Image 1 (cartoon, rainbow, N blue to C red):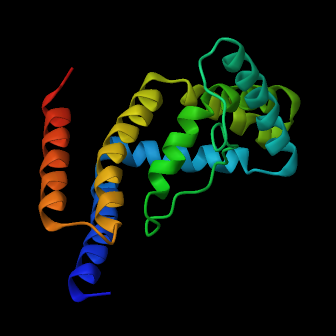
Image 2 (image 1 turned 45 degrees about the horizontal axis):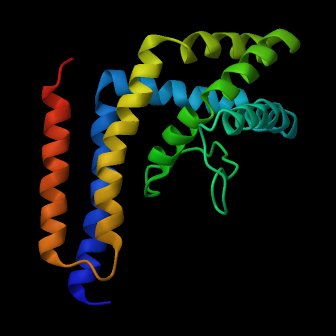
Length: 188
C-alpha cells in the first residue's frame, strides 16, 4: 500500500463514521435507529424466529418468481439476515436498512404472529413494534436512509478500490454531493 492508498482508505472509513454520526444527531434519525435496534431485539433471531421469518420469505419468493418480478440465476435471491449495524463497520447500516426493506412483508408477518402466539412481554414487544413498523414515519425514514446510504455507499465502494484514480474519485465525490443536495432540496 502506498501512503495515498492508505489516506483514501482512511477517508472512506471517516466518511462512513461521519455519515452515521450526523444521522444520529437528527432527532428523527435517532428515533428511527432506536426503533431499528428495537426491531432487531424483538426479532432476536432465535432459531424459532429465524424459521418464522424464512417461511413467509420463501412464500414471497415463490409468488414473485411466478409473477416474474424477480430473476433466477446463480448468486441471485440469496437468503438475507438481519445483522445489527455497527458504527465502525462499513456499510453495515446500509445493509441492515436494505435487508429490512427486502424482508418487510416477512418481518411484518412474523411480528404479527409473535404478537398473537406468544405471551407477556414478548407478545407486547411484537405488537408495539408492528405498530411502529407499519407507521408512515418508520417506512418513510427507512426508505430515506436507504436512499442516502445508497448514494454514499457507491462512493465508499469506489474509493476502496485499489485502482481508483483521483479524477474518477473526484467525479464520484462531486456526483454524490449533487445527489445528496438534490435530495435535501426536494422537500416533496
